[in-house]
Amino acid sequence: MKKYNMLTDKPGRSLFFFALPMILGNLFQQFYTTVDSIIVGQFVGEDALAAVGASYSLTTVFIMIAIGGGIGASVITSQYLGAGLYRKMKTSVSTALITFLVLSLVLSVIGLLGNRAILIGLNTPGNILSDAVLYLEIYFLGLPFLFMYNILSSIFNALGNSRTPLYRLIFSSVLNIGMDLVMVQTFHLGVAGVAIATVIAQGLSAVISFCLLLRLLGTYRDETNTKTVNAGEGKAEADGTEANSTEVNGTEARNAEETDAGKRKLYDFAMLGNMIKVAIPSMVQQSIVSIGMLLVQSVVNGFGSSVLAGYTAGMRIESICIVPMIATGNAVSTFTAQNLGAGQPERVRKGYVAGVRMVASFAVLICLILTAFHGPIINAFLEEGSDAAAFATGNDYLTFIAFFFVCIGMKAITDGVLRGAGDVVVFTLANLINLGIRVSFAFGFAGVIGVEAVWFAVPMGWTTNFVISFIRYLSGKWSQKKLIKV
Image 1 (cartoon, rainbow, N blue to C red):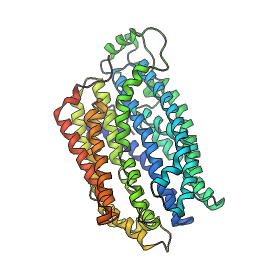
Image 2 (spheres, rainbow, N blue to C red):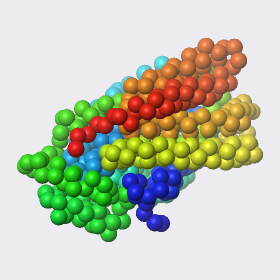
Image 3 (spheres, one colour):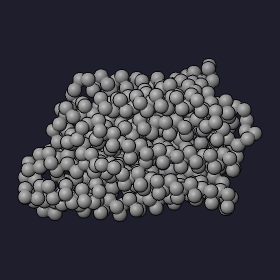
Image 4 (cartoon, one colour):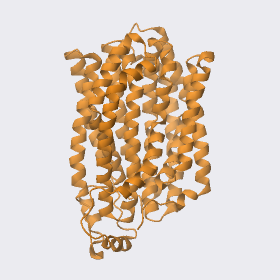
């Protein structure tokens, strides 16, 4: 596949070919979590599927914190890359890795100590509580590896290399599925086996990714004179990296690098401050879906384990369907950060238009597939003889939500521009309002219209979020933001 430079090639083409590996990689990630559910539902039973589903909302919150933090760090890294400041770019990478490793260890302890209390607080049915607790205990033991697995993906994407995360995800997906079958069918470990398989597969992938990142960073030289302005680009191109951006403002960037006396820093608190400005809103944005699912989990749990099993199946499919939307939004964020770092806001506007076309196309395709095949899709998750309520819940959920994925697509790319620019205030507010609508409507109307209130609230939140962010986008104020100094 040809490499496209997000600073010089046509915006639509470069954005699409940068986003494509991200979409495929995230689909593989969702694919093997879906296979987890299918294997559990088919070979262990409906209650085991419900237990994994009860755990899923909580585990996804932690992973989305990692992804959001990684995106926050990647904005700074991308802007330094766009400006050609490689020494500072490397410092931003090491600062991010150290920070989020420490954070993952803290969250792991919190999760181990508090998972049972959280599940009880969410009204998890008693017949699945022990399995759900067991799944979470294993999961939180491996959380640092799972956390770094996602942080490393964001850093590769920030460097314009979206292929390495794809190859790594293919590897971990195949390994995870194979281990699922061995753990469940051969060793009969049930829910525990699925959790162990996930931790081992993603942990091994995280270690491999770290080694590859060190190699990639070595291709960017800390030049101290203008004669080597294009050396980093040529070396990186030879190693297969994408979108190295030394061509734009190269001389000015090198002169700025000359003023940086001494050895490159391993950790920079000033950079951390800028990362936090973007990371916290990004964590909120990335976690909105997951936090919303977690907070309304008690609503679904109140309808019993059969309804929860059907909802879990539908939720897994929804997670797959939003992948191209979220990945396109993240690609727009990197595109925005690199081009603003290079002083090219007009390219960002062209990239946004290209993003609109992409998510609209994805939304139409998803709607057609779910409308035609929702029945066989739900049947794949549930063993023959499962309660009728499980099948009905899953089918009702998919047939409704199929028509609204364009809403989250538009939200994702608009948020991507604001996030990539570091324009976080309105962006954060829009996402918090999204969360508030989802939770309040689900709790307020579940007693009136039933469990359907949970998914009716979803497009309401997505659409409101998009409208608020789009108004900010139209103002153009985001183009005046910049988190780095060159």
